[in-house]
Length: 247
Image (tube, rainbow, N blue to C red; front, side):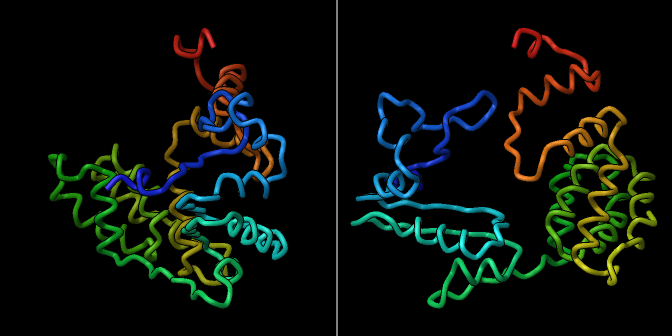
C-alpha cells in the first residue's frame, strides 16, 4: 500500500527551496502566502487540520527540555486530524520527554553477530565474488567486533567491498579494535569509533581532504551540496567535471 496515499500530506521542508537541497512543496509564495509569513505553530495548524499525517523524526539529538516540550506541543496542533509521530533517538532522556507519561519508549536491542554479518554480505556483494568462501571466515570475525552496532557494520561493509582477502584479514587484525579513549574498550561507542576510523584510514588522500574540510562548518549547519563541491574544486581537492563546469 502506498503510505503517501493513506496520509493526506507529505511535508518535506518548510524552508524555501535552495539549490542542492530537498525540494519544498510549499516554497511558492503565490500559492501559500500565509504559510510562509505566519509563525511555525500557525503554519502547522493550517497544514495539520483535517488531515491524517505521518511524521518521522529520525536521530533526534535536541537536549533542551523546553525545546522538546515546544516540539511536542507543535505536533499536537490542528483539529479533526490524526497525527502519527515516530521518533528515533540514542538518548533515553529525549525519548522519555517526547513520549510523555502515557507512552513507554521502545528500546531496540543490539544486533546479533549474524545480523552484522548479513549487513556486511549485502554491502560487499559477497555472493558475486569469486573468493567468497575465503572471505567468510574473516567476515564473520570482523562482524563479531561491531558490538551489535548497525552503523559500524554499514561503514565497514562499504569499505570492505573493494578489498582483497588479504585486506579483509588486515582489517580483522587491526590494532584499532583494541585502542580506545573510553574507559571500556568493549563499549558500543568505541565499536562505532573504531569502525569509522578504519573507514577513514582506508580513504584515498583526496577523499580524506574532502572529508576533513567539512569540519569547518559548525555543528547543525545546513550544507548546500553543490556549493560544497565547488569549494572542493576551488581548493584543488577534486577536479572539475563537465557536470559542474557550467553550474
